[in-house]
Image (cartoon, rainbow, N blue to C red; front, top):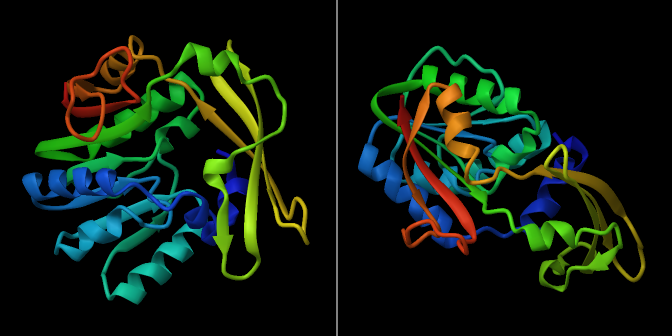
Length: 250
């Protein structure tokens, strides 16, 4: 679950400031469905808080207490009411149903075992109200990029950021790809000139290949209704950057 990586919630938002196109997509989905909204792996609430600001009853579930605390702080700052719950998306029972359930920003890929993915989908299925939709996005694996994960530590210039407390922060990543497990195992290093490697944290992300995804959903009692290749709704294709999946009960 890469808990150590997510114990730095404030820094997480600085490294990954979010994608407005993704927020707009999920907000539009919630508007179309209406009713209750549940986000699994909600993190610091960067997608759910804007949805809740539109008046939807929203619940956010996450495994990291640090991320939930930051989400609560941000929601309070905006005067938005959200129910934040500590829990595990692999198996949860909230005692109610939802009209729109979603998992964004590759959060589903923290589940490495097929059994965990199926268990998550089964839990989602039990929480879907009649006519509800389950939507998630995961990257579309590139065999070329996976093969290039050689364990060498490299600076990710695109991820460098300015920390109001520390100044300019560089981000280095070393990754290897564990092919049998379909998991990329990385170590992230955050540094300033004055404080090298002030954060060193593992981050392990699974790949879900396009052909296996519908089968995993079926085993979880769900069906793939539609799959897009980007936030504009372009049909999924071999060169698509992501798998944006719209699902319903099987």
